[in-house]
Image (cartoon, rainbow, N blue to C red; front, side, top):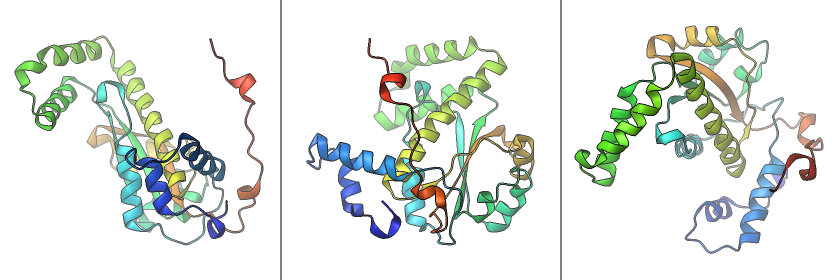
Length: 237
């Protein structure tokens, strides 16, 4: 399903994501499977830029990711500036996808997970759903109690686990939007944190994901996808 011969339209993608549009389960499954089989970890991007409105759609989809207690203990950074991306190249183990992509997505976990995160969430919950704070006391104390049972290392690990949930959603959403991506864990965290001034924002880079459009010279685009068979990977109990 190369970029120049993709048959499904963006209208079809919208229908896939909109439960009010009546598509059969088989149609939805076909569109989803087509997108997931089309995507791969891009090795080489071309110079085409992803339109801002499409990037906005991808970021919005990623922001809708489920997270533990709904607390979303991370920040999504979109690095569009080419000089900024070049400054990160020396901390990316020589992987020039960071500088040659259209945009670089950095998912940074919060390093200061505390009761304040719960308070901010509960206040947002109250205003969004028009529920008095007095009726949310039990939920608030439950969330605070869960966090209080973790030491600082466990809190960071928990926050980074939420980041990877967001990454999975980002990759699927990118495929449905026909955006190429390459998730990367091979980079110097300290270097990224320094360049992006994340430490002073109580954040740390956890995973990065260049996005854009595949180069016609990227031979990986046509390579067979290697996955373990379901009989080996999946157990139904």
